[in-house]
Amino acid sequence: MTVSNKTTSSRLRHKLSLQQESHTPDGAGGYQKSWSTLMDLWAEIIPITTSGAGNSRSSGKEILMAGQVQSEISHKILLRYQDGITPAMRLLYESRVFNIRYVANSGERRNTLELLVQEGVAT
Figure 1 (tube, helix red, strand yellow):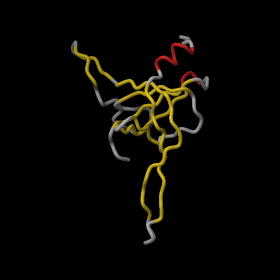
Figure 2 (figure 1 turned 120 degrees about the vertical axis):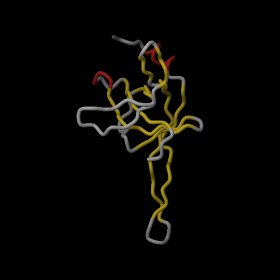
Figure 3 (figure 1 turned 90 degrees about the vertical axis):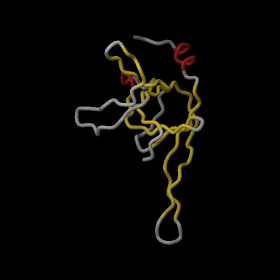
Figure 4 (figure 1 turned 180 degrees about the vertical axis):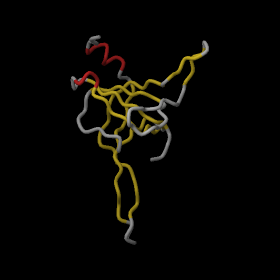
């Protein structure tokens, strides 16, 4: 299925900040962990839902199989292709934190990224 740029653009209505963990020396041989913003991105945030027994509700749980680490997935985030996004990063939307668990290059065409994320869990 082909999606026009206009349709894609109108769906990307959430402005998120892509963040990367950084370490600052604490003066005692250790470090202080913090997050620095790399860039702002426009994206679509889609809650993961499950349907069962005639009921559709927000799930918060989708297990990645086939050798992947199992984790709870709460949302799928779609955005324009951006090179270098990894699961070591996170996204910030207003006061909400989304930890990236999986990054997929949709259709291997370098047009769109699909991120499976877990909301609100410290990593």
